[in-house]
Length: 115
Length: 113
Image 1: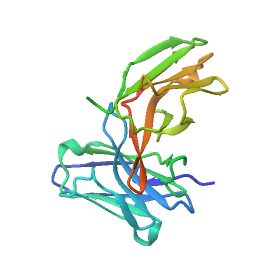
Image 2 (image 1 turned 120 degrees about the horizontal axis):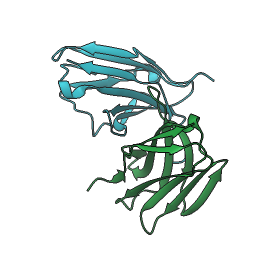
Image 3 (image 1 turned 60 degrees about the horizontal axis):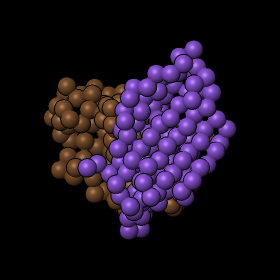
Image 4 (image 1 turned 45 degrees about the vertical axis):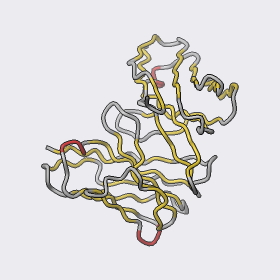
């Protein structure tokens, strides 16, 4: 079974530029998550999709971050404009239905450095 | 007070040692408790999952939950260099129609051969 795929793996941009990350979840997984992991911290949930609908985006900085999951499969996360404090690893995860006992499977992450 | 507290370490032990990793939490709504392992430059992978107080064993790993004290632990027996990674505790609580995962900061473990 193929895992969660993410691209790019690394990205360096200057502040105020925009950037986009892509995620392809495990086939058949209805629930998709985007996390932000700042160096030395645990992952923090940014947004959760159930199919193509948003379930939780309470911690997404909506003035600069946006995410979409068209057709309920792939997802993109965008930052515009980027700030220095956005430097982090952006992890995508997926699970079958998002139920309480389900495992979330994580991708390798996209490492973002904002200069 | 943070919802989940975890000592970031780093923790360095010799091969074969017993390792104890711990987390405390403040939110009584947490119902499910997990330990994830994260190798350098990789995503977290689930190691242990439990939802009741007590112990759960899987090979060299034992997860322990004490809900009355709001304290969880992960024990690694006969630690190996391949166990060197960051260990993240994580907890789930119900939130509307979904269950939200909250992570600790992670403890960096190095097992020296």
